[in-house]
Length: 295
Image (tube, rainbow, N blue to C red; front, side, top):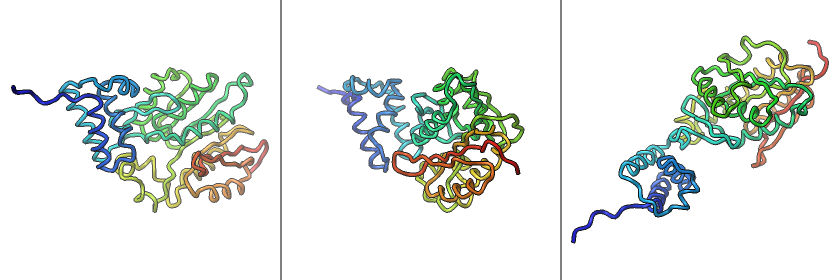
């Protein structure tokens, strides 16, 4: 009796995919295999565990193998699937934008803590460098009274962020602009927020290959010491923050001292403080525009 090849199940494919990704150096081979197989089947990851004996079609097997190959070559999972969750919101991402990181949720938390109490007034916020829209969309989803202007120098990033805002149901409260930093902006804001590029020139070569080879360099490189954009934002925010308004910026490792000295020397800011991430690294810079000041 002649039999055909044994049909492989979800359990089998996860085991093989995990082994292949582990051999290629993935830091999270099992998770990557689950996310990619779930993407092929259009299943939530939990369904993989509920149906381990489900048999894949030949077309699904081929699609899964192609995705595994891309991951083994170093492409980030988020770019392969075209989506990334941030603040429990599913965002579309591509190689025009930085992949949102969990650490950036701390920036969102801090902005929410700095906002006036609901009902006091409608807070007006500005985000510089919107990328995928992660921060602005999370803020709009968390506070229904917030109104935002979100800018980016990349038209492709702004288009992607607009689409994400529509899918998240918050597009009516975010105005998106293609511009460099503060170009063409006027009026006063209650807060200015940014996750600017902060990788120092001598650190770029040491980034993981999947970051260095696939994510947009313009969203990573922050000048000689990684603080070039922070300095521009701190200087430009002076004229756009209302008295008592706040500045909240994500920062990189080792940048606290440089930026703290800059802010403490400025006549425009006070209440300078920092929030650490869950690894104990300084992650978010906070400052307020003083109530009265003159140049």
